[in-house]
Length: 123
Image (cartoon, rainbow, N blue to C red; front, side):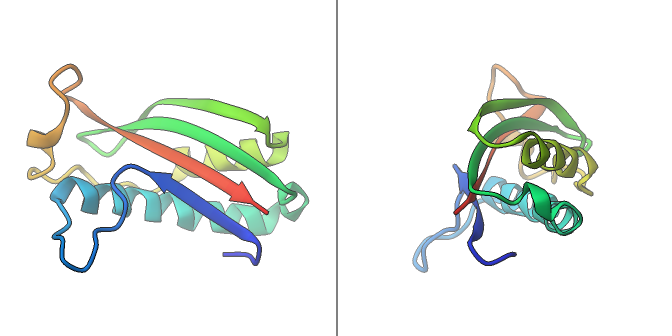
């Protein structure tokens, strides 16, 4: 990660030392890790997009590990380059199949996919 750059994640964060991480939390961490690998490589190619900014994105991962419903929630403090390579990093990430132990924790109103909130903060 570049100095002064961090990605922030909401929901499903790291468990404390006394808490055991759930299968859902482990999978969310894995998905974000795969996105961050792509994001890091794309950001090196587009350093001109690494200005101060904040970007909030939501997407879903299907049971087959495919990105679905990708949308920008807030890009008012972003720039087009940062937004573009972040969206591309999410679409191009090598996301594995959803583990079977995650499936029971999917919401009843959307039992085919898992919601991921992904935020980028560059300061």
